[in-house]
Amino acid sequence: MSARWIEVADGVHVRRHEELDLSLGLVVGDDACLVVDTGGDEAQGAEWAAAVRAVTPLPWTVVLTHAHFDHAFGTQAFLPCPVLAHPNCVDELVVEGAEDKDKWAAHYDAQNQPEIAANIRATRIALPNTLVSERTAVDLGGRTVEIAQFGRGHTDHDLVLRVPDADVVFAGDLVENGAPPAFEGSFPASWPTALAGLLDLTGPDTVVVPGHGEPVDAAFVAAQRAEIAAVVELTRALTAGSVTLEDVFRDSPFPAEATRRAIGRLTGRNRSAR
Ligand SMILES: [Zn+2]
Image 1: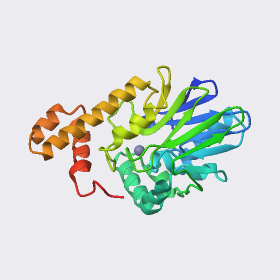
Image 2: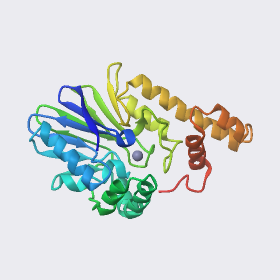
Image 3: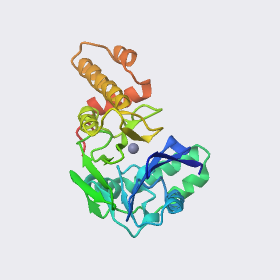
Image 4: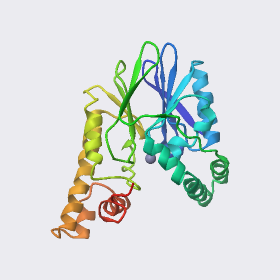
């Protein structure tokens, strides 16, 4: 698994993975460290844990930004430790975890990557043991990490982390760099509101770490928020009959596949699911 470190602020590290362009986070305090997301399977989680151990011997707390496999399936490798997540994250791992394992293992088989597929199949899904419904803070000694939830967006349980002394925000998949936002299973109508909450945590110099891709700034997040809002507006016009589906695909800021998923979530029978 090819990966490299970048240090976005003093003691705030991002592990950039070639696979899925995934970004995992590490915040190091005086007495403890905090790990943001755990990778896509137990083997990847073990690699990630070893990479963290090469940086710091301090005890860790894990925070899961959301339940999707690439962010949450490596947790077992970090246990025993506190694992923080939103209650709906636990729900999704319990209800959909086994199915997600099958789905993504099949995906990697189809991509001719049997090793990753086998690692996903062998993964024991570990559940978060510390629930964060709205806001909390984790004291790492000499620095605090704030954790907040701003309503439905990429999922119904996205957690956002902020390291105030370093002016860094971890956005999970509420923000994507290098690919369109992932709308599958998302809540596009409220996603812009969630991003407004995230943007309230930022200033002109804030480093925002997306779940995928290189770190960005607040202006990038604001632009992505406007793009998501634009798709929501276009879909409203579509359901009101004032534009055609062709118009929506032409005017959408996103490629057809992402636009199709967004429209589906806004109009389909699953729009208020969960
Ligand atoms: Zn995701």
